[in-house]
Picture: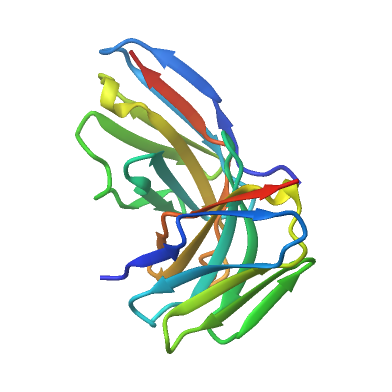
Length: 111
Length: 115
């Protein structure tokens, strides 16, 4: 059974710091991995989608990597800003319409 | 481009009342998902449809929950009768046709409070 774990559960950093959020999954048989951002009281916004054949994806200050063999993904945020404060969730798509979500990392960037 | 549209955004009702949540997926997407999010359990998949047909409803917690998708642009999630433990945020998501995509696009959610 696929399980997705995100560490840490919460993170507080000063503005300007580079940071890494971690996501691990137990079964490497995935089609893709998606990183989402969720602001309080809002829906999930897709940040990056990495196909299983890819190693990384970049969008602006965000870079997501995928190592399928080790069951790990990281989301790197460069030069963090207070506006980056949100909960970040990773989700793995295992096919057959099944997407498994992690519990999320709650990020707070202090001004 | 309009994203996934959900209504109502907030619903407060009393125990025993019927609740209907609505969703309009992104045009052209052929898969639709209903999720529930709570602090204790995180995101839970309730049911999903492909080409308007329910594929898997094993996540629906009880017979009090039902979902329909009468056409490609509309879906409802109904709770009858509602109970306080149903209080949660209910999300609708849609996914495009591309084989193996699995990419999900979420609505803003419907926050349900059952008193």
